[in-house]
Length: 327
Image (cartoon, rainbow, N blue to C red; front, side, top):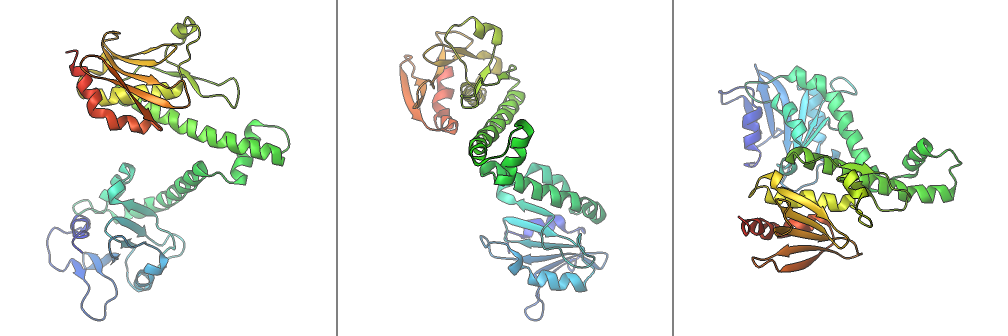
């Protein structure tokens, strides 16, 4: 139980009193812990082994004790995953779905504020219960949306198609728009990631340009006016996202404003001080096989094949070292 004790110490609403958090006796009791407040049970806790899957079949003790105590919150945990339940659906009967799901190793920062309401010194049970319904349904909606983004079902595709297409939803239209919906999901998420990177780094504005064809690659212009004067050069959203990743990596070594971009017909360049004699990296994204070009002290380029933009982080140390060659 050691991995669970820190959370129990933080959620215990009292700072003293050996009986405030009661452990399970050797015989008779079925609940691992009960958190007390002013002599009343507030939270029931059932602990499972670390790594065990949490499901309703693990919660029979919680269902039973929730009905016969004054507890308003039940917690099922394996030390990493924490499922919080209450009685939104029927009074004094524990809901079958949790209103709050936390994972310690992948903590959602948006939920920390809600968890803090159960901490000692700020224990606010009523506030948690008032927010429980919203937390429950927002959590479920996020999971539904996440599933649709990975593999959209027919009704989701039908709904989105109806927003942009006025014809009949035939099998041919369904097949066509299923692919378009998947592509739109990916581009939408990429846009949001790019926006966050720019906001975090104080980057320059990048206005996305809609593709002329639904099957064409996503295109974005960093400087539309400049781009119009460069015949044959197209800056893609993927190149701009890769540039933001490189800039995020090297900004630990140099000021963000010193990292510049320069697109050419053969590659997309990342430069220090917008100086062509100070290359940091080159992005060779114009063929089916993408390459990241890095440089040594003598400015010799080495091309590394990459499948995803995340692989750029594998070369973070090389990129950071490169900027020091010029200072």
